[in-house]
Length: 372
Ligand code: KG4
Ligand code: ZN
Image 1 (cartoon, rainbow, N blue to C red):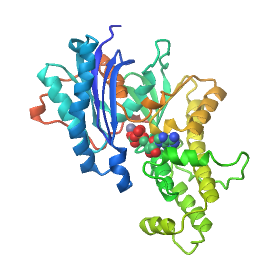
Image 2 (image 1 turned 180 degrees about the vertical axis):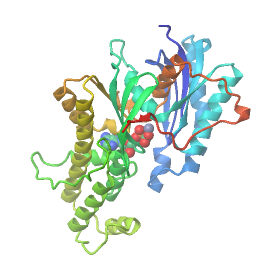
Image 3 (image 1 turned 90 degrees about the vertical axis):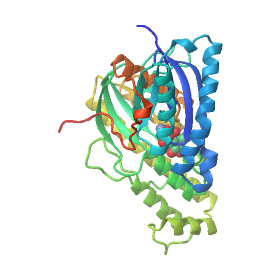
Image 4 (image 1 turned 45 degrees about the horizontal axis):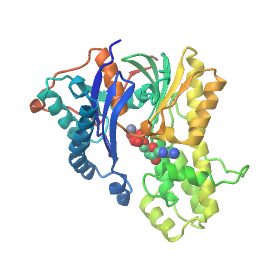
C-alpha cells in the first residue's frame, strides 16, 4: 500500500500539538506543547485560557513542523490534514480545526475530521522503530484518559462497536480528584501513582469499593472518590465532616494535612481499586471476544500498575497487547495523524472551505452500541 503523508493537529484540551505522519505509523516530525503549568493554579483546565494558548502556540508549532518537513524534503508530499474535531472543549477544538482547515484549503488538500478517542486507539499503530508490529484486528480497545473511559471492539478500519464506558467520572478524573485531596497539583494521576509506590511491600491496604454497574462493560469511579474522602477524613480526625462538600473539604485538608502514611495508603488503595476495575472489565471483554487482541490508549495508560495488570491479563488470556510508548499515551498529534490515515483509506476525506464555518463537537461518541 502507498504510504501517504499527513499533517495533523490536536487541540481538544490543554495540549497544543502538530505532527507529520507517514502511512499512519511513522512519525516524521512532532511537537507537543503542554499547558499544564498554565492551568495548574486553577486546579483544572479553564476553557477560555486553553483556547487562547492554542491560538498563541499552534501557528508556531505548525511552522516548526513544516520547517522540519522542508528539511526532510517532504513538504510537497503532504496529502491531507487530520484535525481533532471532537470530543473536547469547543473553543480549543475550533482553534486547531480553524488553523488546520485554512491551511488545507489554501493548498487544495482534503481534511480528515478525527474523533479524539479514535486517535487514542490509533496511537497503538504508531511505531518508534521499524520492527514494531502493528496491532491485529479485531481488537478490544481500552481508552483511559482524563476525560474518558471507554471499552470498544474494533472490527476493522471504520467499524468500531462500543462495549461500555464510565457512567460517571473518567478513570483519570478519579485519579486527579483524589490526588488533589492528597495535596498533589493538577493533574495528579502520576503524582498519586508515585505516592502509592511508596507503600511498603506487603502493606495492608484497606480496599476502596468499586460500585457495580448495570452494563457488563461499564465502569463507575465516583464511589472510589467518596470512599477515599471518607478514609482521609478519618485519618485527619475530621470525622464530623460530610464527604459531599468539595470546597470545604479541600480547605479542611489544607488546614489539617493528612499524615504521610495515610496519604500513601489512600493513594495505594485508589490505584488498586481503579486498576482492578479496569482489569476486570478488559478481562470480561477478552473472554467474550476470543478472536480479539488488546490495545490500550489515553493518558492513564501511562500508569505503571495498570500497564502491568493489562500485560498480565493479556498473557492469561493468550492475546497480544499493544500499549503505545508514554509520549503517545497522553494527548499528541501523531495519534491524530494515525487515525486520519485510517479515515483516508476509508475515503472519508473532505474538501472543507473554512470560510463556510468549521464544525466541531463537544460530545462525540464513537462506535455503534452493542446490540441488546
Ligand atoms: O489522554 P490525556 O493526556 O488527556 C485527556 O484526553 O484527558 O490524559 C490525561 C490524564 C490525566 O487525568 C492524568 O492524571 C492521567 O492521564 N495520567 C495518569 C498517569 N499519567 C497521566 N494517571 C495515572 N497514573 C499515571 N502515571
Ligand atoms: Zn486525550
